[in-house]
Image (cartoon, rainbow, N blue to C red):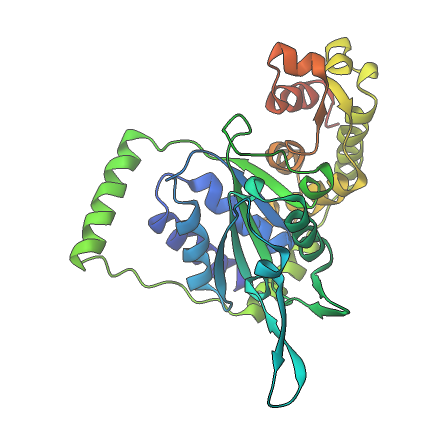
Length: 318
């Protein structure tokens, strides 16, 4: 029943966000695995539309936050407002208290804002003044960032990058998808496009999360995840090139993320067990932003995707 609801949601999102099937699937996996997603790519590729369509389909509020260099932590979290009639300070909550957050161009914000965002993502709470406030139980952040080489952007701290469950790279759609986008936009402008969003309750989402966590994972698949993670910390045991490219391996948070995402992937595929292929499918978005590349790798133009491909080739699944 819950799987059917998520399949219907997936079909609806793919009809609204054309040519970005990977983005849609990773959004659903992040929702199932109770994590946040970082999306990198050029503007205009329906990142905002994807989260908005998801928000329209589930029981939860949506808010878009545009990150700029002059943004203040209180602009995110809210602030205490003095009420003269009662001579008291009343907390006015900020946009971070919505269930679905689109943090647009997150790598343009100053360090103080990053710290406030880090607390919200890591602990699902916000500290304002002397008080701490809990965020909604259903809380998903989808952040977008520009490529670092663009002017006015700053690399996200490693601690914050590690809080993102997934890092997805979005590319331009194909010619056929571009034509479908053109027709969809025209239909919406004319009012002839009447696709109604699927409605999923928070209760369904929480029960689906439990179902995904209960997916069977054999010890051999667990050991495969451990070997992949250890290989990032001890690359010299696998390849001299890997040892030169990797400055630092991934944390245990990556192990947990691979486990949860592989289970969510298997559940979405309609299986009650996890295979090595599920782990391999999730390795790129889970590990991509957690690997710290050496100066040697950066000088050679080696990307994280190249290193992950090498890891999957060198580390056996059996």
